[in-house]
Length: 329
Image (cartoon, rainbow, N blue to C red; front, side, top):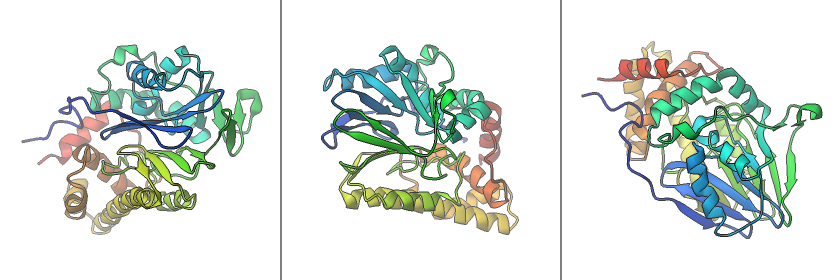
């Protein structure tokens, strides 16, 4: 029997945790669903990742309001995926004036934002059950790395003073996408990584740059964070746990890409590559949340990259279904 497509059978609500990690940093984690982060300064608040819909974002806003009445000024898009960005309008309604993203993320929204939005809404019916509240694509107002201040673009790294705490925002390298952006609170050693890092959940690599991703993870390790809010999974506290999350993600990426390279070198087709990859992935990761959703997309991308396709192909709702059907027993 064919498996239900992506996460269409996952309709049970998840437990949400809102916990303080340091004097100014909070984690909004969702039992394997996409996480968000919150940095609360004496003057302003910054949110990292805007959730999938304005309806979901309003829950995050309500939890923020239990601990602070400061204005939410900044929203960081760690990357372009719809489950991370389409809730941003709720923060704008709350008064947010800057939506921040890297140049790579902005370019990906231009290139494939519409297709990604339709694709993800089909994959995640529970997360998008309030899709009618989404006004459309989320567009950054401040682009890091663009270098044109007239258009609200800034070069390199961006440092924001929220009052009593400074947040550094930059693109550490390609991985989950080519535009991944992090928030780093150096004084408190807290890292908001977006989907560059996951823990005990599926690592989605359908739009990834797998060859470069491990080096990007090592750049994050060099920060020596004492806490991390990964894209999915529990917030990790203490250096040992942070390294555990980095190691988990690196092992997923390297195991996946090694299997894809072996499959490509052996001349396997995609379905054979999937069976080959399962031999090394299932025993280690088969138990984690969203594994069966991620793996077909992950193998498809890894197989493409192993065959020399460096720029990930665009996922559309139609391509999703065709790929999924082709890989079923």
